[in-house]
Amino acid sequence: MPSHSNQAGQPTDNSQFTRDEGSTDHWISGSCHCQAVKFRCRVPQQPELINCNCSVCAPLAYLHWLVPDKDFELICGHYNLSEYRFNTGQARHWFCSTCGIKSFYRPRSHPDHFSINARCLDKPDWQQWPRIRFDGENWEDNIQHLK
Ligand SMILES: [Zn+2]
Image 1 (cartoon, rainbow, N blue to C red):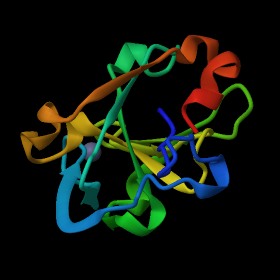
Image 2 (cartoon, rainbow, N blue to C red):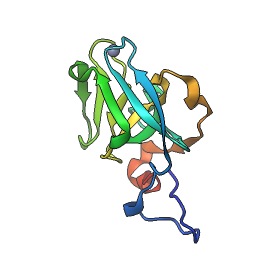
Image 3 (cartoon, protein in one colour):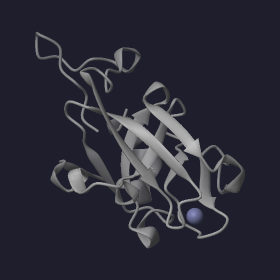
Image 4 (cartoon, rainbow, N blue to C red):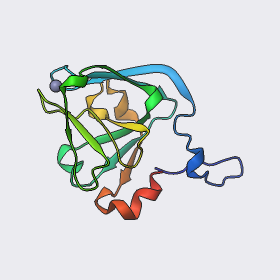
């Protein structure tokens, strides 16, 4: 994800991460397929999506929307989530143990955010949001561009 720029046009550093700046009071809900897992998220003024080609995102066609913890609410389904971890084990990949759908997870790159699968949102608003390509197949080389 590109860095935000300050008034002088310089990229801001990671400690000034401001993705949630411009939050609105607009919430959008989402769920897994069987509706056991439901959540809602606050939509910022300029939401954007990330398309990742890594070994776990590509087969799912997972379309990331990074939402800070404070803008995410799990409505129901906590006890229906199963967890899958691999490689460094830092990312917590959750999926519904009934229908198998991965509607959100805790990404390794942003431990204070949830990554929502935009395809699991109830409304099609996300289809208009800009998409960024992330070369997650070469995660170590590229992750600094996402922060
Ligand atoms: Zn389900």
